[in-house]
Structure formats: structure tokens, C-alpha cells
Length: 265
Image (cartoon, rainbow, N blue to C red; front, side, top):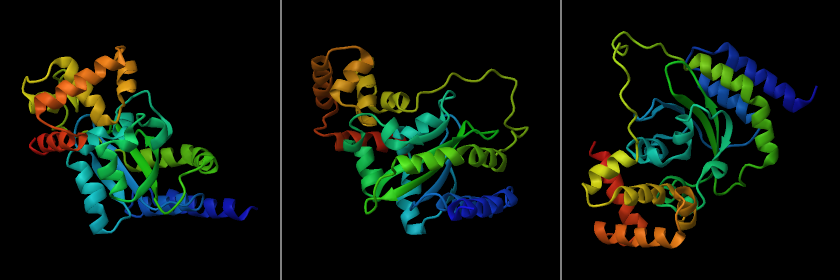
């Protein structure tokens, strides 16, 4: 038997045996490390527009303050994994670079969440445990290591069915009586547009709000133009007006205003 296959079998067997116990997540990490190299392992649970819940991570407390705590404080709404977890049609293995907008790596969110923490690349397995909109089991590589390659993604995709099945069992939760209600669900609140509307308080037009949201997510003017079916020159004029109206001169200042608004609510 191939040694790598034997190592995977042994590790995943231990993970299976630990479902429902505190040892499950670390053993799941051991199983993943038998098929590929990674640095950070994180598991985030998402429930609509609620703040994410970190179910597991393997970081030191100091690093977790930057990677986890800062993320949960508000910037998560700009995270491609957050958007994917809340998309009922999404499934399977997702790679950051495949989901992110064209200028994501130049965005202020990327600089503060990925570059600042030394993360080069991230891959996630999207799970759907009962009681959550989605749970993402993700793993990263640092800037000192190569990005995940085709061989890595192939290995994760091969392991994904069993990992998702185990994760769905382990992290499922039942809805409590206090959470249950006969009332119809409230209309979904856009996690980016709503705080932008509060932040700008009528200063920006609805179209400018749309464009501001896309800028914060990491879209270029060309990408925004394609997304909204308008001319790129029109987008650039809107961006100029947005910066003028908000009295900011950079995406960094715009991001800071947005995060301040998120932190206030």
C-alpha cells in the first residue's frame, strides 16, 4: 500500500472516531496534513449576516488576534469565503484566488488581513452542517511557501466528500426553542450596502453606494463597469465623486471609515 495513502487512512480513521469530541478538529487537521502542507487551519461558521463564529484554529493567541479577532470585528463582510458560505448554490473546494475580484490582492482588506498576517494563499472546503448557513474549513500557506498548486487542489478535492460529511456531522446544531419562530423571516440585509448607507447618511447616491461596495471588495474600475453594465469612464467619474463627497483620498481611508462603521454596530 502506498505510504501516503496509508497515512491518510490512519489519520482519517482517528478523525472519524473523534466526531462529537473536542479532538475532532485537531485530528481533521492531522488528516489534511497527511495529503498536503499548510500553515494555518481555521474553521469558521456563518449564519446569514451574523458575525462569523470561529469553531477552531491552530494559531498562537497572538497570531489569532490578528487573523481571527480582527476578522470577526467586521472585515469578514469583504471576504470571498463569507460570500461563498452564504451562497446556497456554492459547494465543494474553493480557492481564494479563483473567487476573489480582479484587484482583490491590491485591496485594503487583502493588505490588512492577508499581507499583514503573512498569508500567501488559502483554500477552503465548504460544508453545510444543520443550523448554519455554511461552515468553511480552510487552510493557508505563508508567504515563505509556494501557493497551492494543481496537485494540492486535486488531493483536497479527492478528500472533500469524506471531510465534508464528517464536518457536517460534527458541527451540526439544532435550533433552540428560543430561536424558533412562526413569524416570516425578515428580508435579508446586505452586509456591505447597509453599513455603507449608515456611514454615508444620504451623501452618496444608490449607484455610488454600489460602486463603493465593489471598490471595497477589490474590483477594478473595469470589473465594476462589467458588473454594472456601464462604461469604465463612468465608473471612474463616480469613484472621483465618491472620494470627494466623503473627503477621502485613498482606498485606505475609505476602508478605515467602513471598518469604523462596522465596529460601531
